[in-house]
Amino acid sequence: MADNREVRIKIRNLKKSFTDKKHNTLQVLNGLSLDVYTNEFLVILGPGQCGKTVLLNLILGLDTPDEGTIEFSGGTPAKGEVGMVFQRYALFPWKTVIQNVEACPKFHGVDKAKRREEAKALIKLVGLEGFENAYPAALSGGMKQRVGIARAYATNADIMLMDEPFGALDAQTRYQMQDEILKIWQSKMTTVVFVTNNIEEAVTLGDRIVLLGNKPSVVVNEFVPNMARPRNNLSQEFLEFRNVIADKMDLALT
Amino acid sequence: MKKKEKTAKKFTPYWLLSILALVLFFGGWYVLTASPDSIIPTPADVVVRFFEVLKEPIANVPLWEHILVSLRRVFGAFLAAAVLGVLFGVLLGWFKTFRKIFYPLYNLLRPIPPIAWIPIIVLLFGIGELPKMIIVFIGAFTPIVFNTYSAVLMVDPLVLNAGIVLGANERQLLFQVALPDCIPSIIAGLKTAMSIAWMCVVAAEMIVSRAGVGFLINRGMENSDTALVMVSMVVIAAVSATITFILNKLEEVLCPWLTIGK
Image (cartoon, rainbow over all chains, first blue to last red; front, side, top):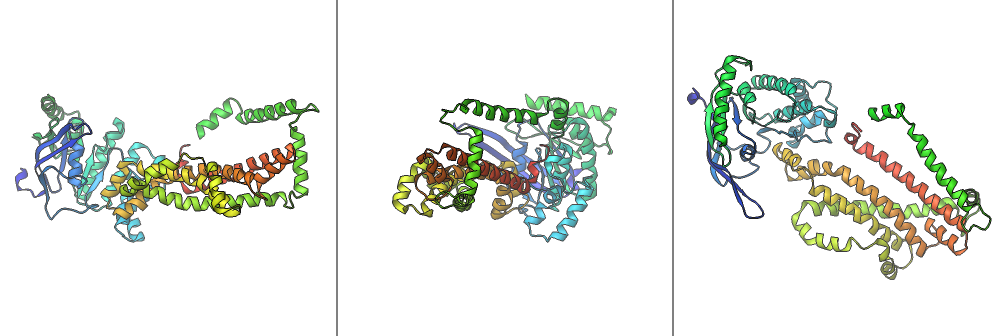
């Protein structure tokens, strides 16, 4: 089904290793290949420490691969042209909510009136109206991540990378944020690469789920949950799908 | 904050404990010095001497001017140390080459107490205003550099990454991401520097000067006027407490995000 879709990011044979002070080499990615399609919600599922963050850093250009290529349709984006949502929020503590959201346009020299207006619209979109002038320290985890999401979308990028964005939230908030992120994705039409280690979250969100093996990582499996959204995580179909992935994940870990 | 207030209402009124400690301190002081042949003056003697000093100038200089002279030395040197210290600290923390060149040298000179510099400074610059300010400068510069340098070096890499990902260029990354993150530590360094500067000015004035709070202590010592020594000590404590209070207020204004939930 995916074959007739446009490829937004083409990742081929990506290899990355790190050497520590004692000269031990750790191969993190070992020839990983992956296509990310335009406007899809792609979930990258893998056990902890399997190199998911390394992969995102390579896509962002924060780090360079030892081998392999990452190609974007329409050329490699500059910094600030790919949105990123961090697991530990990475908000600027000295900035208010609205100042955090407008950080990217500010770096790019967009004039104040314009970037304020856009930031306000995004704050409304993530449901933080009335908290524009609050500092991150005054917000709950869920609210902080809403700021993180709004800040990423303020880049106006068409690619959003999300690194276990709800990993630090309690279950209740997590379900709520999953609903919200789908709504935002649908209203903004962006390509999302969402990293998680939670199978249920993967099945709830993904158009496509890519399962990574343990280090050194390659793609070991791909799943397409053909279920209408919103997906009921108690339905027979959902649970069966979840079990199939869980079995494969156990295999991937051994 | 709310939590603290609640416990305070429920249990002990804590301010009473503070008062109690003060009463015990001054009470103890009085008891220990009350006998007529005590060589240390009682609290009452000090208060009496304080009002005398307010009225009659010492060495032809009224008390408030002694304080002003010391303050001028402290603030002049402190401002210079703040500007140069923050600059030097940022350069050390942000630029690796700069760090490799100057950090070992800085680290070597850092442990020398500012007061140990006095003979050399007097030899080089005599006994005017400049040498005293240089001593104070040395005392204030060191902690400002150290706090700034450590803060720049320890900026959360995650916050830096966020800046890069959001499109900050190298300059914006330093001025709009790294430095704002360092402000709390820099202010902490300034506070430490201020109290050290105040200590240094007293020490410098005790050695050579004709005015200032350090001079007052010295004059009291020379004339066996222990009450005057203690008046000077009280003045030093009061001025220092006032400066700390102002710096704390300044911190609240400059770093409003730090006072949330405290």
